[in-house]
Each structure stands twice: as C-alpha cells, then as structure tokens.
Length: 82
Image (cartoon, rainbow, N blue to C red):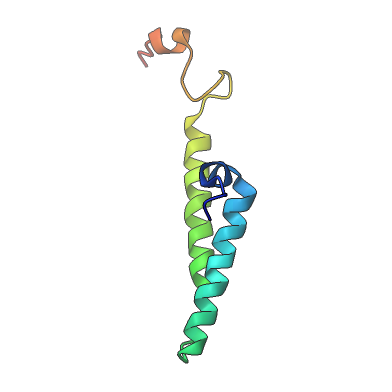
C-alpha cells in the first residue's frame, strides 16, 4: 500500500468508477455472509437521476458562446430594460 500513489489513482476517472463498483460488490458480498440481501439497483437509479439532473442544470447555466462557465464582458455590461 505504501508503493501506490493514491493521489494519482483518484485523479483517474476510470479507476474511481471501477473502485466504486468494486466497493458495492464487496459490501453486497459481506452482507450476504450475514444473510442480508441488498438490491442496490434502485439506489443506483436514483443516484443516476440526481447526477443527470445536476448536469442538466449546469448545461442550462453555461453560456455556449463563451469559453468556460462565465459570461462575456459584453453580456455582463448589457442591461435588458424589457
């Protein structure tokens, strides 16, 4: 464990997703040892729904005409008096 650079590992998105999946499988296996069944499909569906909703909100906020997530100086100075 000392010869693993954990900071680099956690920056790799593929590794993080695989680790999360492995943890779910390990938890399910440990619970089965104690006779507890856990169907986490409903939990995963809810998490996916929340994450998708967050991405949708961020996508609505970001101005596609500028780089990054902020508005351009011209838009920031404009006043709409409608």
